[in-house]
Amino acid sequence: MQDVSVLPLWRCLERRGGPDLYVTEYFRVHRDSHPEKLILRSIHEMSGAKPVIAQMIGNDPEHLVRTTRLIQDASDCAGIDLNLGCPAPKVCGKLAGGALLRDRDLIHRIVDQLRPVVRGTLTLKTRIGFESPDEFGELLELFGSLPIDGLAIHGRTVREKYQTPIHPDCIAKAVEVLPYPVTANGNIVSVATALAMHGKTGAAGLMIGRGGIRNPWLFAQVKAALSGSNVSCPSLRDLNDYLLELQDEIEAEGEFENETQVINRLKKFTNYISSGIAEGAFNQALRRATNKAEFRKLCSRYLESDDPFPTNPTDDGKLFCGFQELAN
Image 1: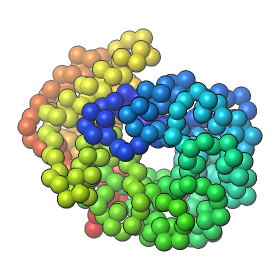
Image 2 (image 1 turned 30 degrees about the vertical axis):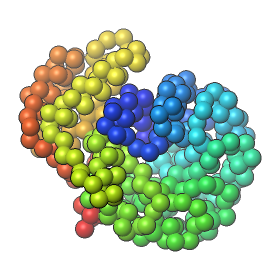
Image 3 (image 1 turned 60 degrees about the vertical axis):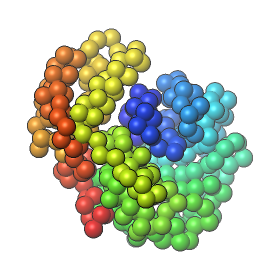
């Protein structure tokens, strides 16, 4: 996830179990681009603990190949992933991300040229269509013909963004027909939704994004549930520790000149983390914070409690939408 799948977050996740592998925020690829140093650093610093996949976004085969070589020469990434799913209008307007789903020939040319130069795994992250799930049948034919090692599927169309329930039946169809592992993505925000996604799709893996930012214990909880072990139940006090730790990690990166910039950067995460707490009052209060003292005071006010951290976020139609349908 752009701007949030970053090293400070990864460090906090690892201390709470973390995923089996990480995927970077995307390297933007175009004629004049060079791999972003901060993303390369995140690969270097995490790859000793867990495999890291370098994600790229772009549409020019020549420059995607050039960037792949540069990334691999500068890092020990475990593989390369091409983004075919980002729904951001700015990205799609440049015929990248999800917009590539409208040009299947170009996708084929890109993959054919990437395959000989990728040293590790070559994977794609996609959605189930641009306008409609009806496009997914033809996309499956394309994906089945590509020399890739795996496919992660976000179970919505590009047009649906994050504002609808997902379509697990499309992911299940991909699992049935594709000759390589399929990873399911979308609306995995709790143990219940993870188990439901796994059960409804039969996917080889689960990709967790927003749910893992909100609940850094989720990866360990899902592993425990799948193995039949006891699932941990963190408290609001545990969440407070996570938030303060994340603030410290962001500040330690040294990117920002003052406290306000640090707190504003932190708000990219707190929009997810605060969902489901105090009926939105906590998030509204955090949005007004401008320095560390304010931020810590608000965390103490709302989170210094042994009450359990809410299992689910708020189904608000913006950040988290339609997850309840998945678990049903």
